[in-house]
Amino acid sequence: MPLSFRPLHPLFAAEVSPVDLRTVDAPETLAEIRQGMHEHAVLVFRDQQLDDASQLAFAQRLDGALHSKTGISAMTGNRFGNEALTDISNLDEAGEVLPPDDRRRQYGLANRLWHTDASFVDPPGRYSLLSARAIAPDAPPTEFADMRAAWDGLTPARQALLAPLEAHHSIAYSRQVLGFEFSAEEAEKLKGVVQPLVRTNPVTGRRALYLASHATRILGWSLPEGRLLLLDLMEHATQSRFVYSHQWRNGDLVIWDNLQTMHRARPFDDTRQKRDLRRVTTLAMPPGAASHAAGHTGHPGG
Ligand code: OGA
Ligand code: MN
Image (tube, rainbow, N blue to C red; front, side):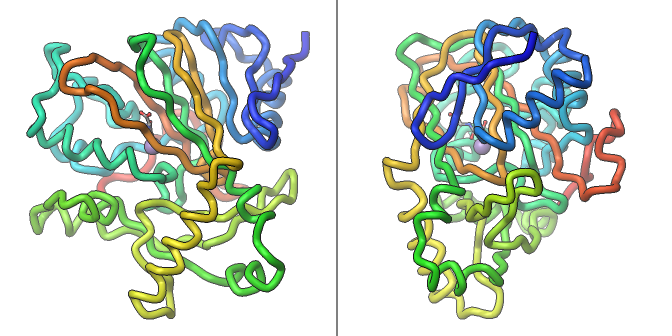
């Protein structure tokens, strides 16, 4: 039976009819999900029973190559022992909440800035699949912004100015903005990459602004002018009319397209209340590359 998509917001985001993603394998069903991602940019799947292995396996069936974590966790290791699985929890190895001054907590606080995942590697992240394993009913939502609608909301003159521009992205920058400090060795590994400021979806033809808290500067512009432009565009793109707020339930798997949206976490009492989510991000391999080559787990370092 074909999947159906129930809109959750006037512009984007849809809830998908019941399906067990542990077993979804038919090419036509995977194609329907990819098509749903092109159109809706955020998909919500309720009542999933994913564990780490089935979440990783589904991400590979959906989009092939996985992003392997390149931030400081790649240097310290994470509690899963697999850098393709990103720990979005506030928990330590013993399952207890991280103390306020824990470096992992301080680093993760930058998820509260508007961003898109893995814009600081090339090829960049495409789909992020975030699985809610243990989440309190009153836990904060995750917010998503539709970057196609943000693009559509610009004047033609503004669009013409922005279309050829490029920005440099580094994960170190979004942390440094909050005052997080890196050792020289860490900074050396987090130099970042250049990305276009505007992207076109190959299936729908829609253009989208490509912004993130990781964006450090606009190429060819002075630092202050580039940063002012980035701040201005951020403010524009995150107006409430462009934002869907996802209220989590246990068992949710939310997939977003990092090339068409931004997102951010919201504050909560995270040194007391446990929140366990796990993320897998796929890479936007260039057409023709072995994008469905299961087993490729992306970049070392950098
Ligand atoms: C992420 C992320 C936000 C949240 O998983 O990439 O930014 O609400 N999560 O935890
Ligand atoms: Mn994120």
